[in-house]
Length: 363
Image (cartoon, rainbow, N blue to C red; front, side):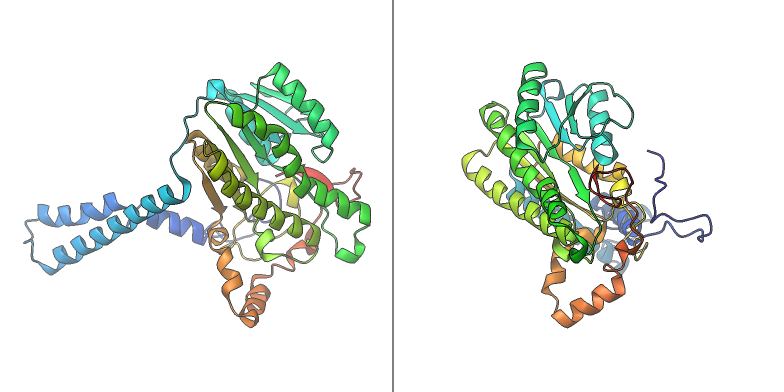
């Protein structure tokens, strides 16, 4: 995917190191010094130089490699305990439903699976950005309307087969202070960002429970659901509810239908039209995330049949610790991060029934 033209990316006037971020540094270290394979190469190299087994560098390198290996094994065990065994996924037999899949992250995932031979149904109120895509069938549908979802579900099952993978990706951002939001706008925002998840899960989950191979439900949430932010009261409330819905549903399914997998995606600011014009407060600590990077992780989790929790960038995986901080420290952190100033440059798109700055979008 080509670099996004939206705000938050380095401009031509920025210095050469602008793309550098803490995520890139951590990624480099995880694939080098903190990787078990690389860690064990170090003592082997010392031994190749005829260094004695009891030499200090040799002992230190062995201790380092052993510690890294134990941490890696602990991570594997933790994932197995947390997420259980994977389900078998055969893309030729899967029917994937993606809400808000006409553009952005949803469209990217749809195109990848379409090219790989899966059957993909895209639900969106807007026409597909690329017109059409191989293996992808477009259905015009407002996921905030229960009746439309029911009608489209019947068409999908009749034309494509029973859905086995559901990706709830549709969202709307109004970007207004609470006092500037009308009641119909609040209703529309909460319906699209939160209630639509209930509607689609209630519609498609029963078919997954009847399938011999189970199914996968992917929930696209946001770090804003944990942090909250000025001019995002409706969006933050909805995303907090979406995260809670995922956790509760995962607990229910573990008891009643363990063959169903659930994936929670909690991204920071994505480089998509949903947040057009919004500037990231700190490109090093909180870089804008490219949809292709999130798509890779989502596709990996689905392909492997795993339960998963995906947070990007790095701070998104640790954002829950924010609420552990003393309230005074939280206030200082918010001020330094600039999270409540980000929406001041929000642009959105024109031509929407939700107003100049509000539009139903895919991530």
